[in-house]
Length: 190
Image: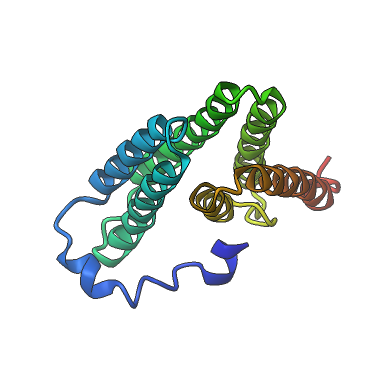
């Protein structure tokens, strides 16, 4: 939803910065992943600081694509690396939330965190599968930028439980929306 609406709108405003960054986009991708990995370790100890670290990791995640496009360094491997580390990052963050709730003896929200992880993966998988079959899969209300923004807001404000519910509901809706979309575009091909 955010990606579809705003796409690469920051490419132009951040062009000057992206041309000054001498790091390869893949280095930015890996750095962002390491920062998100650190946030996953911090979240069970201090959700606020974990949210701050997650924000920093998300900035690297955004910058890698901008640098790649503005410096003409877009590559198939770079896209693969970015997608793979995005999924791993999502897994680490949701598992750290499950640990946070477990440590607080809140098993219900620990399980909801894991369900949110499963449906977040399904959102990514359904898009990849639709696009792998030749369709357009970038639809729905819960792509990664939305999920990250909601998580960051929940961690920083302390409304983590509300954030988990919002993400879970949005990812379920998006998964079924994409399933219906796939049925509509592929039903005539068998």
